[in-house]
Length: 207
Image: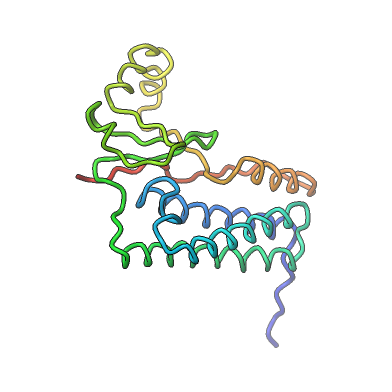
């Protein structure tokens, strides 16, 4: 007789929810690295922009409806819309390429600060004005970063000396979503904070 697997526990469901959010976020970050911050939805026909925005709202609503409700039904809705978000990003990527649009310029690093501020990093001051960007994006060059390191050596260099392989990482999901999911986990017996590590959001595009 085949053994029947026990149903997932609330902790297992909430852990899986976090994994789904991370997967969708990583897909979004990859598209931002490839096309520039928030450019891709505006490089396709308006119909597809509207469909993408609608799907994104459904995804965000599904995530928030799962918060504090670790039942299979909300989880299935979240998983459904997570899959739809990944397909949506891939479709926009395909449509932009068919339309002859160009990905982000080579020689540019793009990432987000912990508060969600988008940053584009270039090599020289001369390249700052050459970056096509959304109004929210701040463009910095390596010379400016060097000036910051020189001004605050005790903060930057001391850390790197003590931890030569350290990386600064952050999650692109809104902090309110992750905080809410963690709050839900804290209500479960035996909860221990879960360490989440993701790749750095900075990405070097080779020139």
